Length: 167
Image 1 (cartoon, rainbow, N blue to C red):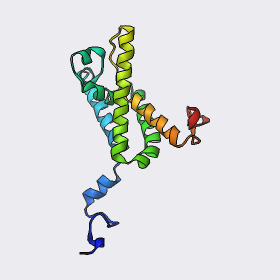
Image 2 (image 1 turned 60 degrees about the vertical axis):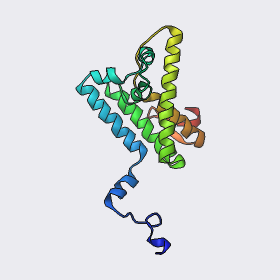
Image 3 (image 1 turned 90 degrees about the vertical axis):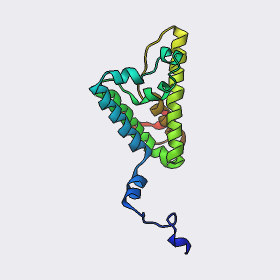
Image 4 (image 1 turned 30 degrees about the vertical axis):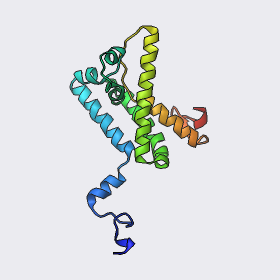
């Protein structure tokens, strides 16, 4: 058996399932999950209560909420749309550099860290308001894109050209 008979050397995929999975990016999967959770939230408001993050949740040792809040969004469609556009715009530039697995770890870690920052801020203020949204992870991906491509020009507010380093 020669080296070119091995699956990992071939240019063509060995099955249709592998083709679909090979073309699927982490960005696409994250967008699909966020949209699915948004649909569930609109179908049942209890979903938001079960997945949101607050100081009281962490006091009750509900640690999973440090991750699940990042997939919930407010009932306004704008919150979801702008987060997913930001994730898609900047994530598709950064994901090829780091690969699927490392990009996913970076994104999820960013969500956890931003959730911890929110909780620490609220502890300092004596508050316990729940937080939802992927904004912390999306901002982290935006900053990572700015680190790699500081002179990349985007249209800020769809009007003003602006280099990513100034955003």
